[in-house]
Length: 243
Image (spheres, rainbow, N blue to C red):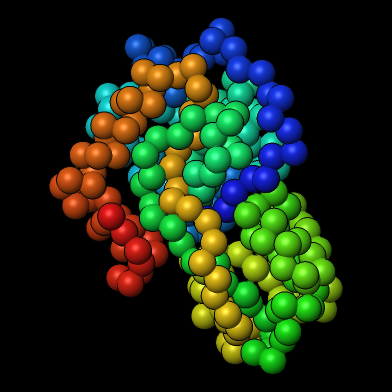
């Protein structure tokens, strides 16, 4: 799953910004809207995908009134902290670096493998030029691997970089890249997989303990009755890792 590598841990948290206490207020669900099947904008201009369906169900079970907000990935954590929305539900892996700045619910998805995708299986991913989305765990992995990294603001730009020759391969979540490969009519291939990243959870301000407890309870109920597994398989396929 995607993870921001935070450049600073100096973001200030304020209890006064903790607007989402679940007591009659509308909870603003922040997502990227650009990472299918996790989240995307559909033809009607609305947030859609696995996390839209999951988030709506979690809000229902928690007894919360929720609305959806989109935000660019590279500023999604700072804008949570500053109060522009009350949760992050955007394919966000739980990492120690993030946990220094925000809190997380329990994971609603287990770790997902990352994949290299290129125009040919002969690409040297260890020494080549690899595209990755800025601020992700994949970008950090490439930077430490010895390959040359080129970073882009959005995931679709990383795939375009491979197609137009700017990069030899792209590294991203396999669940994001696999449908793109399947629809490429043989133009793109999966070269290799790497086990990086942790489970995915909802990001919440550290001061919003009540909201975290409500969503934790809702996630637990979906795990217990099997509905989370069913939803995961609906969006990611029967072979997807699930709880």
